[in-house]
Length: 163
Image (cartoon, rainbow, N blue to C red; front, side):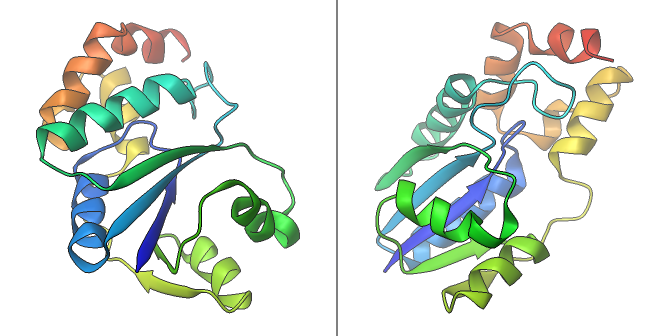
């Protein structure tokens, strides 16, 4: 089976890594779809598609995860056609891994198998960005490679400057 794991990954964090590890354990390959791929430089989407792709690649390599593909998926702002939009862009997949109720609903309505993953409390990208803005510790919420990439990209300053 091939898994689809879709998210904005602003930034990719330890819960995302856990989800990819789970999908890889259960499936032979994972397609990682970076949503809102055209967005960057905003408070909700500070990092570009290539920055996010590079971060994810670094974290997966460091954690010895292979057999994955990363694909950009731009927004279309059309919930009714979004699943078909995703399917038209990403390679074949058999099951969607998501912790997002709305994503679950949209794919399930189209008859696509969904594996609901449990969210890890207090680990989400919004919390990480908020912690960066408030000068609180955030590094423990992301894989080491992600923290290094964020610092290398001046991501802390970038996120603070947007607020």
